[in-house]
Image (cartoon, rainbow, N blue to C red):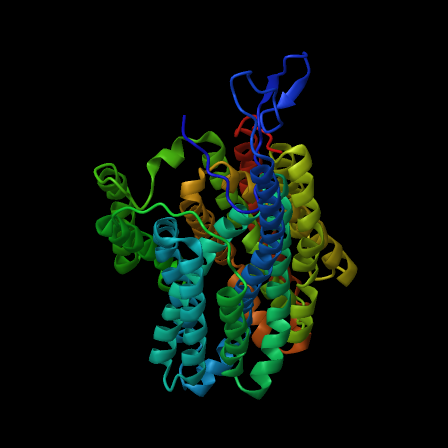
Length: 530
């Protein structure tokens, strides 16, 4: 049987055994010694107790220090992902390029590099230690942010955004494993729930802060990361002393190349599919090449001793189910963040600031509910809680699909909040189940799977929602409504076309979320950890 190494902050579960007097005790309690066994020295026992007390205090301090340090990096990365979008028109104008051209790569370069590097970063974290990967990622991301702010041309800005993507990949691949290792299993859901709060705050603050900073200079949206990153780097070096588990082994270069090439091709193709056309020979060639690389990858991984992706993880029913439901949830729910700005700005004619403000109920609700759901998952388990949360989110998507040109602001707010409740109830328990099902020595790889599932789900969500909405005429109707005189917005035909396309898009997303509910349920009964 494989030995389980107890890491800082973890409480070991000792089996119960029968004592000579018939009482049940745990194996860490003192059992009567055999007559020929000398009792331990009092001094040694006293030193052992003192050492244990000191270690317990250090571990308790470290787990919260870990949460704070991880929070700094996660907040910075999520803030960056939400703050850049609102600045694209200003960046395009400053570099004298069209908004629909190469400037989109400011977003996509970060996305595709992140997707391509995440799983490899998770494997490297298992090899050399998660703290090392985390701090290198933090340094690269912070340096990349400074370079983005100083970029003299669009081409260099895109290149520096790709560099940021490498740093972000290292951070995202290490952070869930760091939290899982620092907190005992009985507090894992709570820790991941608090981490979800930080993510939600980053998403919530991004659009508002981005609009304010862009009004001064778009370069400030990158420079704002520098002081935050420096604080995180110093805190990691000075405060974080937790000893992290390592699983040394040879690096698998061919697996890393195939994985990165496959995910980059697929992600980039999905990102540009709507713009250049799904039947474009270049797009089809990229998709075929990417899928081919991913199909070849398992055959390569089975022939190496230390693969980038350990296929044994995919034999774990809980791990596979949690990953599948994770991808399906992001595929269904990320469409809300993608589609709602079009609804608010094009159909309703709201200014960007007001539209951004109306989008905050969703992440703020997640920020409030996520730690509660994480704590509940620690007490009652993850399976039914995650399934119920995704079911609520599915209903929320159906409710959002009913929005039209005359829906009140209150109806928009409560529908988004309702969807956020479901997403929060699902997210923390599902992430806890995913990380908890992986062995200690493969926590970095599990983190990579989690982060990759999120990025791939988001990419497919944007591609799918955009394709459905455009195919039904919603995109064209929205563009006409935007460019027209305010009185032209009252044309019921255009409004009806937009609303119908919007409705079908979200009903499809709700169907995907419903499949995710079943994917969450088939994981089977989990082993409850105390």
